[in-house]
Length: 184
Image (tube, rainbow, N blue to C red):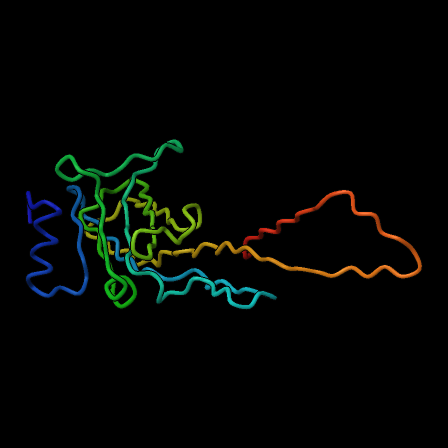
């Protein structure tokens, strides 16, 4: 598979009905096999009508590959373009993803982004995985990559009455209170 670009591999995988998308970004001998998973589905306490994001809400997953050296993250390139795999919900959560030909003595970072249509619904900092690759010949590493679903913001309104007995109430203006909270 020498000199085959990422795009031709993806086209070949689609035409062959391949269940595991493959990216071959460089000339190493290590394969990273990833299984995307939801880190934890969020719960909402004390709020009716607000449903947290769930795995079924994720319509698309994007995996991006980087190298990390001295705390500096650099995109891995294939033919001048960053290595990026886009998967639908079925591909992401019902199979494995392979990054092949990774180089030894290199630390790779895979970033995972979950989307509902065009809206990102995952937390960037919690949806990544660092994979140090030592000196192995023809090694296969199997890892799980988390997708941390984001909180859903919501706004609420309430009204209240005021009863005054044995006294007087003098109105001097109006007050407005806004309560906005994020689901934690």
